[in-house]
Length: 167
Image (cartoon, rainbow, N blue to C red; front, side):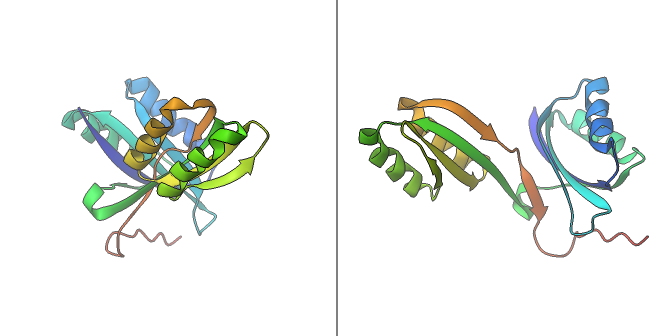
């Protein structure tokens, strides 16, 4: 089993995300990560999906997604040709005496403290999955009452594979 990241350019219409995730559900494919957002052109949405499977399943996913009505373009975002990022917000329970240690860890990872309360901090970190996983692992000795991850967003490097849609 291996993971593959797909970038979809789709019409910005109601239900498009539901139709795409429904295809995965009907076929029994697992979505490891999914993000979606409107592009610079408000007619279109960019969806980044990370899926896991063998080569045959991953090829089927790409072909079947490309057949959906609202899908304008599908491409694989290969790690060596792309940039991936993920955002995580982590609420760490930390008394005043523990805060300096938590802040020092955040500084090492270039994370931001975005909220401070009497008994907790909220930390924001952006990076690749391994960076985020490593940071969470270092927080293992602290209580994490809440955590929110966005999933992977990605773009291909350079201009060679940019898709332009003229309508």
